[in-house]
Image (cartoon, rainbow, N blue to C red; front, side, top):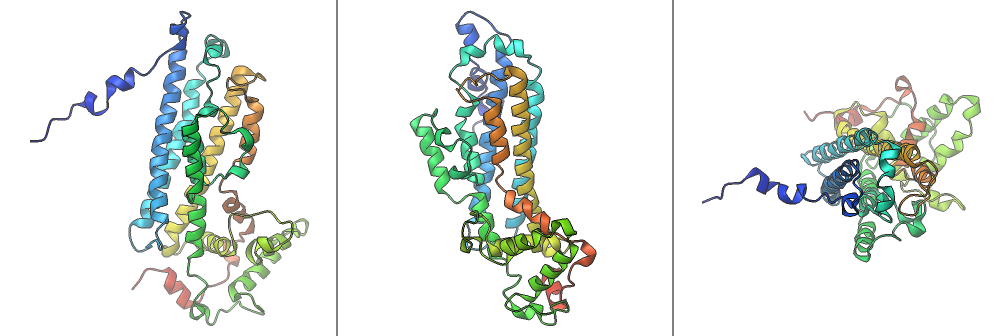
Length: 350
C-alpha cells in the first residue's frame, strides 16, 4: 500500500526553514535584514539548480545525432528554454526585494560575512559554462575559481569539458539541409552570376550590399568573413563559435521564419538570445545594486566590486554571434523568392 505523502515531509520544510543561520545572531549583534539577505540568496541557488536541470535536459536532446523536427523534441527544447527565460526574469525581479534593504541596513552585518561572496556561487559558474561561456572568454579567468573549494572547482571543470548549449546549437544548425540538395534550388530566379557560391547566397550577398547606406560599406567585407570564408583561414582573425554552415542556417531561419518548418527553429534561436539578454539584465541590476550598497568598496570576497561586475557585464555575452546576425538582415519585401520546391519543403506536408 502506498504511504500517504505529507506536504511538509515532501518539501522537507523542517530542513528548508531551519537553514537560515544568521551570523549577526551568533555574534550577539542582531541585524534584522540579514534574514532577507539569506533568503534571497538561498532562493537564487534553488533557481540556479532548476536552470541547470532544464539546461542539462536540453543538452541531452541536442546531443542526439539527429534532432527529429517532426517529433516533439524541438518543441520540448523551445519550451524548456522558454522556462529558463522566465526563471531568469524572476531572478532579475528578486533584486527589487533586495533593494528594500538600505546601505546602512547592509552595513549592520556586511563585515560579518567575509570572505563569503556571491563570487563563490559555483552553481552559477556551472550554468554559464553549460550555456557556452568558455574559460578564455571569462573576465578575470585567472582567478574566477580561486575562492572555491577543490570539489567545486572540479564540478566546474567537468562542466566545461561537456559540449555546451552554444556548441550543440552550432552542430544542430550545421545539420540543417537547406543548401545541400541542388534540386531544391533548380530555377532559382534571382541566381545571376554566382561563381563557386551557392546561387541563393550570391543573390543575397548582392541584395545585402545594395541595402547598405554609404557610411556602412565597410560591412561588405564583414559579410564575406561571416558567411563566405571560414574565419580560421584568415590570419589574425578572431576565433568564432559559429562556422559558415551554422551562420548561414541561422540567418536563413531568421529571414524565412514565416514558413511552418522554420517556426520552431526561429523560436529556439530567439530563446537563446532572450537568455543572454536576461543574464545581461541581471548582471546590470546586480552591478547597480552593488554600487548603490557599497559604492567603490572592495567586495566581501576581495573582488573590485562594481568594476568587476561591469567588466563581466561587458564581456560575458554567450550568444553574441547569433545576435550579430541581425546586422545582415534586409527588408522582407526585398528577400529572394524561393523556388516552389523549396517552399514545399518548408511548408506543411500534404
